[in-house]
Image (cartoon, rainbow, N blue to C red; front, top):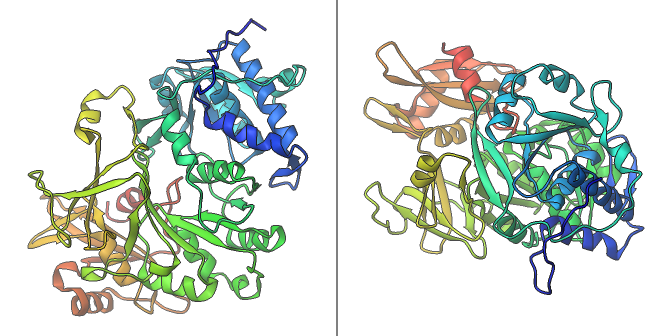
Length: 516
């Protein structure tokens, strides 16, 4: 192993999120901190030491400031170890999302100057598809494999010497990618200081200490909440993915206090027959967000689960923006929009018109956000950065308004808005309305252009048990309550709404599959 020179660590020097979390783990080295999906319990000292050993091994292989390490991992302890170790060594970290095709993965890695790919045992098949592709970097496995060196086995021979001081506050912590599965998504640069300040936010009612269930991808928000749980002296319980029966059983068995779900997944829990017989008394908080939530379904959730719902609004570009606790779950504004809460500490929000005018309470416009948590910019896209990030303000692309008390209401995405003859249709509003129809269990609304490029409102619905809604029935329902403008021109009854890798309704897939 080559000799590694540490950055100065004088008193008052910056400590990264990994260093801070590992310091917390060192206070109670014998405490269980991770339970894997297979039931293996890992104690704090074991996790800490594995991170340090891997960090030194990676550093000896050239990983450090200015390098990029990519993770092709699932919900495993090895995924967390690898992310912490790469960050500790000074590298920026990029996660490849499930749902990306291997050629797109290779192009993403090439675009971010990736020098090393780490693969866990959940992603071996994809890794083998990547091996022959142009743009695929050097590959190491996090455990035994038939195609790459087991870097954890090599690192296990090293002493568990602490590593610190390898990064500064303005260094990139990660590049998060947003967008779909065709073409290279945007890469969002988040600094170490920005993420460290996000992590310092203590979640209300997450448990003392928290027992966090990670049942959605660690590459997305579940990984951030896992970091928060460890930072707050808690434990992370891993599942390989979301399956409602398994999640309910895990909450009861593991005495879970907190989990994160996107609204479509929350609805699946509510509709599962095991809900009524599952002991959920340990649950203190379900954080939800990522896509618009239905007021009808949230009322059902509050009745079934109690005062445990915390809605959050954020973006990869701005991270945490607002939070709505149990006391305001049914707070609605004009047009019946649910509030997404008030600004988090340190966050400023303004609503601006297209000409830049700041709008008064109640007037919808684009939501702009400024805070210590916003991105540094898009990776190698200065023009896009200048368009979205101006004078420290992130232009979110969301349409919303503030009320007199500072509560924010999101109407829809500017780009999701359907421009029809006679006006604008916001899909989130129509989806919320449709979920109030007794024949509709789930739905997604999207625009479809005809041969003359005129947009039309289309809706895909999953019917309630024993129901079969018709287009005429749905059009009458919508016209009576919202007006003819919002009435869908096409209705598709489907067995399920497809979701993206992030758990959001995949409207691109619906549009191509159903409306051509």
